Amino acid sequence: MTVAVVRFGGSNCDRDAVRALEHIGVDADIVWHEDGLPADVDGVVLPGGFSYGDYLRAGAMAAHSPIMDEVRDLAENGVPVLGVCNGAQIGCEASMTPGAFTTNASARFQCEHVTVRVERADTPWTAAYDEGDVVTLPIAHGEGRFEIGEDRYDDLVAEDRILFRYCDEDGNVTDDANPNGSRGNVAGILGERDTVAVLMPHPERATLPELGLTDGQGVLTAFA
Amino acid sequence: MTAYTATVTVRLKHGVLDPEAETTQQALERLGFDLEDLRSADRFEIDVEAADADDAADRAGEMADRLLANPTIHDYDVAVTEQE
Image 1 (spheres, one colour):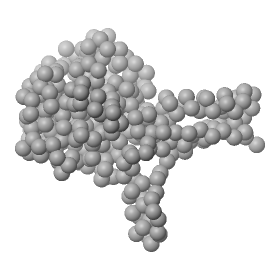
Image 2: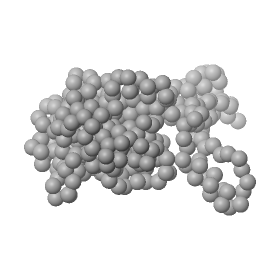
Image 3: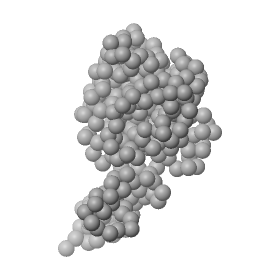
Image 4: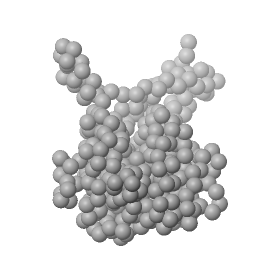
């Protein structure tokens, strides 16, 4: 299994993602977006950062980079694709996942640990957890508020495509536990296939034991 | 062909929270201004050579659909003027 971690100008979690994947025994390489994907790719990570300086909207420019056509083709063939933070914004801007991540309700950049509840445990990203598990992960974003029209949100719920919701330490999904004003406390969602997921929290920053938090390992084991 | 400027204005859809606008409103109020509400929008001025104003508007609208606006959260409008 070789995972391509796509580096755009302004990506800054690409090396973290590679180190975290290698730690769990997954072969991973950084791929510069202009070079296109190698032929033997078995997974794709769209890493966090500030691609294109967040010009226009976070993720909007990278979403239209030619490599995203290749990523979309792979995703449609069932290859696992994970977007984290800026990668999540890119995934939504590229319409690989529904909704949009926009300015936090606080209008501030927020860098803190949050707790999220596992809404489904029957996906590659959450097979290591049980449904209802409370997982601690770091967030670091200014535009992480999940926004989508009310009808579309109801569809997402009906289609069971919400992967993680922000919650308190006991797993209660409350307004107080919502760090950024996301609709429905949504922290992570699935694409049309369960093999495509985006989330604002950083599992790759919660994988290496020396960083003191390893709750994110389970998400990355989708690539193992 | 005629030279036109197509002005695309991109706004948040009604009901979508705009924390930046709220923060700006609060800052104005701190400066002593009295206002009821404030909305923000992005404006793009696009110079194009087009057969007529409708053609220029269509092309600018396509640009808004593809990139300038995000249909999940934005509405937009296009106004076309002939360049002098």
